[in-house]
Length: 168
Image (cartoon, rainbow, N blue to C red):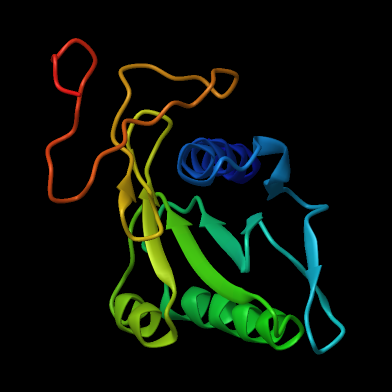
């Protein structure tokens, strides 16, 4: 999968989750090279995926790497969040790092320190994304980048409800 395809995959998955939780239309999700957000510094940051809900702005850095995410990648995202947040005092800016491989030594600790959320979307078929610390996504049997991404939603303390299980 190419990095641009990965960004679109994450954008589609996030749009489905956010729409389910907040009713945000997928068109409200920004993605790609033209998705730029200015910071207090005056610099316009290219953000892989972004969306705003109420008083929050979520910026997602996508890492479709063949290796683990490095501490430097977390630090770069933390600096972007800081600059953008300084230019938007009325919004809470949240940073998310979506990765295909997970994080290497030091990256997890830095993410926790700077409040960066780590997400795994390893392929179009297996992904774990959260939104508002309470919504999780699972796996699909088949999905292409042109298909609509639907997520199975559940509360963390309860087991997921699957179609046909009779649970409601």
